[in-house]
Image (tube, rainbow, N blue to C red; front, side):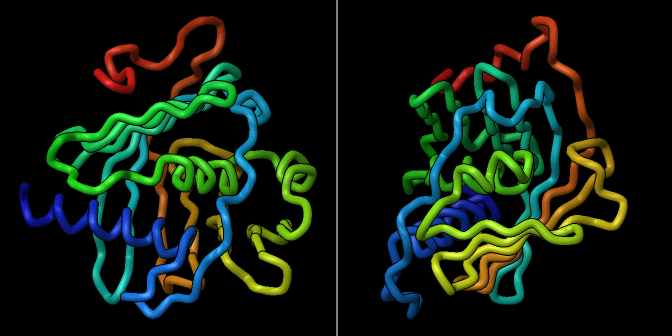
Length: 207
C-alpha cells in the first residue's frame, strides 16, 4: 500500500474513531454517540457531485477525490486516491448502510460517521433542526453551521462567501474542534440525476 494512501486512510479512520468513541492514545476524552442519521430522501436533492476532499491535521494535508450522490432513494459516497485507485464505497438506503472498501485499507472505514458529515454540510437547515434534538444542538448562522453536544461545540461547518448550495465551484470547511482537524470539500463538477438519470451503476458498493 503506498505511503500516501496508508496515511490518508489511517488519519480518516483514527479521526472518526476518536470523534465517536474516544481514543486514549490521542489524549481525547470519550466522545458522544453518532449524531442522528436522516433518511436519504429528506435532503430534497437529486445530484451527483465530483469533489476534492482535503484533510488537515497536525500540520499535514491529505487529499482524496470523492464522488457523492444524493437522491430520494439513496446517498452514496465513493472515495479515490488522486491517482484514481478506489478506496471505498458507502451506500445509504432507508435504514440500511452498505460499505465496501479496498483490501489495501486495513482498518474499517467509519461509514455512518462519514454520512453524518455530508448531511450536516448539505441537508436543509430546517430538516437538521428538527432531527437534532437533545442532547444535540444544531444552529444555523451566517454562512456557517454548528453542532453541539449540550454545551460542547463539536463540529463547525463554514461556507465560502459565494456558497449557494451544492454546485460546481462551491467550497466548505468542516472543523472538528475535539480533534483539531479540518476537512475542506471543494465541488469540481455537479450532475443533475433526476428523472431516472441516476449515478453510475458501475460504482455499486461491494463491486
